[in-house]
Length: 249
Image (cartoon, rainbow, N blue to C red):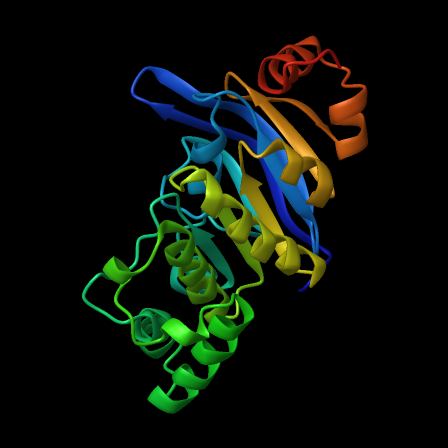
């Protein structure tokens, strides 16, 4: 059953040995929302995304995707991962393949599309992220910003319903950050559901429908960008933003 609630996360816990990284996380994400997740390094932001994508197995709690618990033993993880894409800090492209092949291979192997169909879809999304002239290039010939745009096109080529972005600009030179954020802004405006772990406060402020502030493994505050950036209720949120923005909130 499809509902407007894409994710419902209940009492999510993740331990690494004796260290509890996520402590009782509860949140929902609705269709078309852009949720920016901010917070200091080590607050659990990336671990939350990796749990959502099942790259990490939660210690406790549940993750409901359209009402189905993705942690159930018989849940179809392969199908789920075609609907929930992930864009990483380090691009994770196949260095021995061209840009076009990088965007085709998942479609052919997982979605069982023909080579021609996969190529048509890949070209459509490479055009969308401004990378169509680089279809024959190998990743080593691209800048960091170009690699990240290819990684985004690759996720889109799988016809994802949701894309999880794990600090997609943190490995980029400053002059390349803008080109990736612009692509993400355009995706947000197209209605794609997005969860974005980011240090880019201006993006969080301008593009998000909601901002989640994580602190020491918990969601300390979850509200609109207006509230988070202008009148946060939690003193830890204020303290974090003061450090990052160098101004009183």
